[in-house]
Length: 295
Ligand code: ATP
Ligand code: MG
Image (cartoon, rainbow, N blue to C red; front, side, top):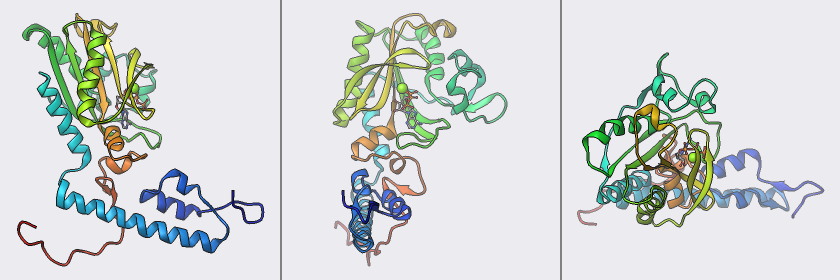
């Protein structure tokens, strides 16, 4: 490692913060230099290059893609699931305390401390599962098997800061009730239905969740992008649901982060600081005129 005297000379905290904001990767951020001049020159060089990258990203959003990756990931998943026979549902963002209690989430549960309360009895939903359970309790009576539904929308959790967590994020929760064949086999095949059209390499690993116990996770480069579980499950009884099922909850910002090759989730989430992964407070030159029609 290069050192000045005994102390490694790296970017200053301010330089490091700014370079991280505009997308410098961890390895480059940890770089060390022979002198302050060399460091400052490298800072300027990185800052110029990354500012340009951010401006270019905003340009491709404006001229080509027109929709943020978070939303195109959502569209790809919705289309894949509808093609697979799933029905999209839309349920309220505000959730009653009783719905959480039926998921086993009470004052003593770790997730409880992550919940945003709107008033004494209602919170911003931290998950979609209670609402899907409720719908299933009716649809199991009204629709023939398999009953395949999904919802995609905002969920809210108080999170201590981290590069994989947002306090408002987008969950896609799907559930298939009474699937054809074994529920765990179906769970695995449904992971493929979602991940294949996104073109992401993934693996399925066995893990444990605070709400459901034994679960499967979908991981991309070692990062959890979804958790899945099968029923019959002990929670089913509280909802009056009886029968096998397979369900996944995907985090769309995590998928968007993976698709864009980023290592931080904030740029791809709902934000006023970033627009579709690009930092807004960068210098750019406004194009001089409107492009001619057809250009
Ligand atoms: P983690 O262990 O990473 O905190 P989790 O296991 O608590 O996540 P789940 O309840 O399994 O999360 O939620 C399903 C999916 O929703 C996760 O796999 C993840 O992709 C996404 N997700 C959960 N919490 C967040 C969050 N705070 N920010 C962004 N995505 C999230
Ligand atoms: Mg999980």
